[in-house]
Structures are given as C-alpha cells and as structure tokens.
Image 1: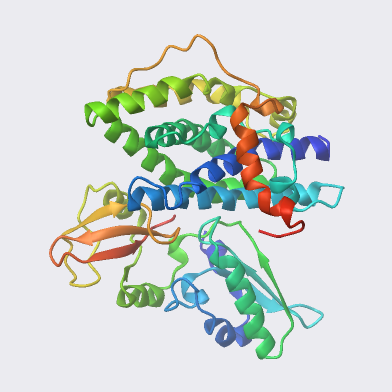
Image 2: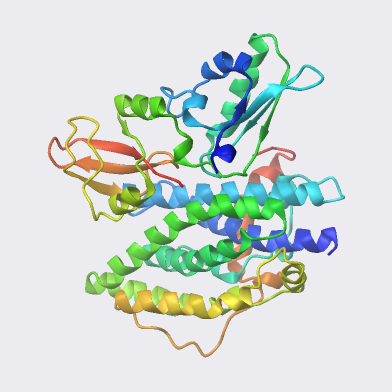
Length: 168
Length: 251
C-alpha cells in the first residue's frame, strides 16, 4: 500500500504548494496535511493538481483549491485543480513535521488507530495536553470545532484543547 | 443497466443523507448543549459532503445537463427517494438521537457493502464515508445508552421516540426496481440481506440501554417510491427557498 500512499508531486512545484496553508489550521501547509495527491505539468504546459478531502464535507476544500490556483498563477503557471475521493485520505498521510507543528499550535496530533479508539471511547488516558503535557485528560466530545477534531480537557491544568481525530 | 436506472439508484442513497443532513442542520444553535449542537451539525456536514459526491456523479451521468444543485434543490417532493425515517421531525433530542441511531446502523451496513461496488465512483464515496459514519454510530449509540439508562425522564423520552420511529425501520430493507437492477449488476447493495444483522445489532443495544423493543404491527413505507409523510414538504420549502428565490445560486 506504500506506493498508493506516496503522492506524485513534481519537485519544481513543491515550494509553491508548500506556501499554501490549510485555512482552518493555518500552521499546516497542504503538503504537511497530505491532501495533495498529484501535481505535475500537463502536455499543454498547464499544471494539474489533484487534492483529496480529509472529510467528505470539509468546507475548506474549495478554499484550498482556490488558494492553489492563486499560488500557481502568481508563480506564472496556469492550472486546474481536481478533487478526488479515492484512495481516501488517512491521518497517516500527515507528515511528522506536520504533527509536530500541530502540537505546537495547540492541537493534539492524531495517534495510531488502536490508541485513537481507546482515547475516543474514554478507555485510556493517552492524549497529551497541548498546554502542560499531562496525559491526565478526558474526552469532552467526539466532535469539535471542525470536522477533523474532537474536544478534550486536561484534568491537571484544566485547559480545554482540540485533538485531531485519527482516520485510517 | 441504463443511466437513468443508475441515477435513480444513486438518488435513493443520496437523498437519505441529504434529508437527514438538513434535519440535523436545523439544530445549528439549537442543540441542547454546545457539544451536542456541534456534534449534530458535524454529522450533518459529513452527510452533505457524501451527498455532493453522489449528486455530482449523478449529474455526470445525466444526459440533461443537470448539476448537483438541480438534484438537491430543484426536484419536487414526489421525486425524492429518501426513506420516511430520515424526514421525521426533530421534536426533541430523544427523537434526534433515536432517528440518528436507527439510521446510522443501517447506513454503516450499507456503506460496508457499497465499498465493494463494481462502480468505482460509488465504491470511492463509500470508502470515504465509512470512516465518518463509524463516528456517527458511535455518537448516536452512546447517547441511546445514556438516555435509556439515564433518568426516568430521559428513559421515558427515548422510549417514546423509539416506539414512534420503530415502524419506519422496515422500509430501509425494501428493494425498489432500481435497487434490484443495481444489485444484480454488482453495483448496488441488496439491502434486504442486511435486515437480520441490523435488527440484531439494534436490539442488542436497546437491551443494553434498558429500552424496550417495540412490537410494531404496521410498517410504514412509501418514501423510496416518492410517497412521503406530510413533514417532507415543509422541510423542502425551507431548504429550497434560497434556490427558488434566487435561481442558479450554487452551494
């Protein structure tokens, strides 16, 4: 499955795409997030980009598509952005760098699937508070401020925080 | 299978999510607590996301130059193919949860089968949606238990909601002509085969939640054929208002 998970991105386009950020979590670039699955030049010189949503109803996708086109236009390229659903996005596509940036930003990064289930069912205290680092935390709600997040609260420092849900 | 039959099959799945999504969407700012308000609207958003995938695909198949908005906003009541269960009004939070749970269990079983569809587009939407629907059923199942095994008041309310919605569950497993053709072609799901698994799972949870399993003497049906309860007309006039007032708006 590794081949399927590796996006195809032309090296010349990496810097341009890296400059586009997720509108809901601006600290992450769309490459960190792993939503860009394909970016390369077509025969007619246009850039073709394929992106996949984190969640089907993610309202940020239209904005991300527009932002990509804008960034490419500014770099002098004509482009077309297409939304694809398959293969479905998983949190595994988020880069390690992206997970670190998320945590610094105050959103607990997604864990692996087994740990995630335990955490969301309230069976295990493993989600680390982004404020004080304690794992003495509890789930407040499986649904948070955006489709990709759940709400947690730290029982040590009492701070509420977001957790980026795991999707595998 | 003709394109029109495939479109009818797709609408049969999509309309359930659209109408339920609209019902949940009207809870924005009206949920009983901030967390449940956000949860219901998140679920609504997931459903709308899936719906767009279905309608866009149906629009591609359509020979009449239709768009996703035409399917969502410009059909008449009799043209909607959703089951009666999802159009039932919110009434109170117990109804919202019972309706959600009774649909979610069906939805996940349907998606699990649909991801093996020979149709690539439908398989892709299902594979994506399955991850979301597992969160939905976890949420609604937890609340079923919390309300059923909660206070006397919450127990009575969820019991009443289950009693009143139970008669709508059997329709989930009825096969329309489009369902039959799609299932034979290996594209669609034979929902009639999901029935036993569905009732087993639901009844186990009801027992755990100390909710009595209702004995229904009469099963409601008609939605899949376009014969709806009085509630759908009101929902549509609300949902379609903007598109009909300002034609050609895009969502």
